[in-house]
Length: 111
Image: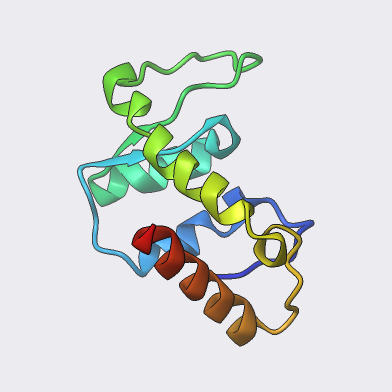
């Protein structure tokens, strides 16, 4: 799902995750720390591995060992952002943008 740059990802997280089968854990950063998303994940049978924001009154516990594995995904996004066309979202058409991501992913995988 491609959203405008001014829309927070947490607002569309539920819609994106509905398309996927439930998993045992969902690893996300502090930006996804919302009560609504946590409750929806728990109802779905998924344990949220999301660190709480520092200003949250109720500090939730999370599995720090699983959260450390998030770096694999972060490194993948950093490699994609090496491509100027993707980092600046040069293509406004979603088909062209997704094709550029597929091309960049193939080249990154090849190297």
